[in-house]
Each structure stands twice: as C-alpha cells, then as structure tokens.
Image 1 (tube, helix red, strand yellow):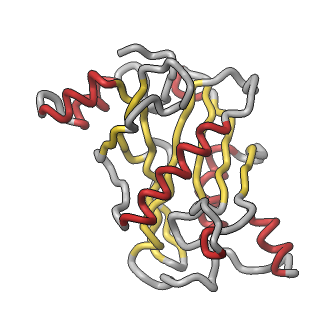
Image 2: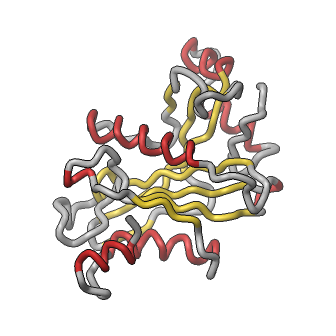
Length: 218
C-alpha cells in the first residue's frame, strides 16, 4: 500500500507516517513534482502477508547518461508511529533499498520483476536479521530477472549516489542501492582477486549512477 492507502484504511487523512514522509522528502529535491509509479502491498507482512515491504516506487530518470527507472522501497525502516522501533539511532534496519534499471522512458512494459527482486531481498533481511550495507554483495543463484537470458546473476551494494541519509523521528535511514553484477565479477569477489569496491569503481567511470543494464555481458 502507499501512504494515501494507509491513511484511508486508518480513516484519517492526517494519519502520521513520518518515516514514509521522510523518504519522500529525500526524493522530492531529486524528482520534484514527478508522480512515481507505485506498487503497494495488499496484505502487510505484519498481518501475515508474504511481502515485507509496504511499497515500492519508481521514478523516471535521465541523469548519468543512461535513461533509467530509479526504484525506492518503503518498509525496511519504520514508517508509522504505531510500529515498534521508534526513537533509536537507526530506523528499523537503518536503510531503504534502491535500484536503477536501464529502460526506455516511459517504459514499454511494467518491470514487475524488479518489485519481486526487491521483495525477495527483503524476505532475506527480515528472516535472517542481516541488513545490506555499502560494499556488501550477494549471488542471486541465477538471473536476477527470472526467465531471461541476462548475464546479471548477483548484486553489489553501494550508497545511493543521489540520496544521502535522512534523519527521521524513528532514527537514521540510509539509501543502499543494488547494482547488478555478472558471474565473472562474482567469481572475482569470491576468489578475492578483486574487491567489490574495485568492481564498483571501475563501473563508475562510465556509469556514475550504477544503472543496471540487463543486456550487459561483462
């Protein structure tokens, strides 16, 4: 669900969701009045649903030399006053996840697979209690976009280059971006012949916003 849906269910258009509003306040200077595409969760995780994230938004972005969609999650951090975890140094897990997908703008089809990917990552974090952070990495055990022939089979994580951390009444929230990497890059990290940081820095030379391109071969 999105913020408006949460307020509707509460029967109160002023229902407090300061965590959600803080995320929006960080995105607004970047995207202004652009209305993002938003995918909400019908049954929340707290009520027995399968999706930990309350919602995912995607903005159209022309920056960094590559047209792309910029996704941002809502749910790793504390969004609503009635949730537990209010008042700590960090809000919830202390971050929200972002992801940039190379795409024609407007997109020719809805990239629902990205929402599935982000929800799967959230399931791992919520079940394991292990948050993602800057320079972490993870294999996807297959293409990150199922039923595709993409060579992107893992993710490296980096601080989102355009979204600095934001203070909320619940604590600090960082924005951690996933960037798709190949099997060759995963093998290099696992064998310690290259670090995650070295791989990310190499891409940054030509791809400063770390936009994931499913057509990339290496």
